Length: 190
Image 1 (spheres, helix red, strand yellow):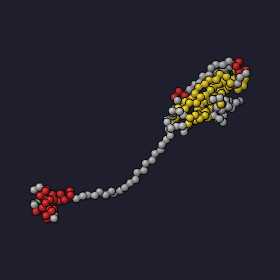
Image 2 (tube, one colour; image 1 turned 135 degrees about the vertical axis):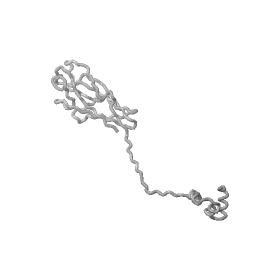
Image 3 (tube, rainbow, N blue to C red; image 1 turned 135 degrees about the horizontal axis):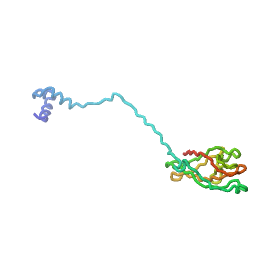
Image 4 (tube, one colour; image 1 turned 180 degrees about the vertical axis):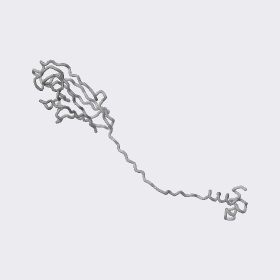
């Protein structure tokens, strides 16, 4: 007996279970068929809520690898040039920060030990006497005492470059020897 004839007889009798029993179909099989025809609904035992959080950072900047630990060597000068000049032997260079796109400005902040006689200049720890280091950007002194020691540069294509000048500074009676001065630079950005 096929399913079509069973369905037709069930329609006439109005009860599919009776039809299965009359035709000699086992009740367990009939129950399985009935169960497969029943539509099951699924109920959730528990519901939950997922919360998502995050932060969008503006990007980062780093000093160019060549500027992280860099020695700027000033050209040698004669002691005689200090007779009528205070600042001599100017060496131009630049510091560069490489930034992610979206960073608009980079601030270069300088710090170090001020000279004992001129607080705007950086102390010489070399052997020359009466000499300090003068550091400036675009002709304006970057002061060692921290009162005017930061410069802000706008980025262009992810790069911020700060032009700088370093020179010997007459801070007293000049004596021959070496100039050694250490200046720390920190960058911040936005």
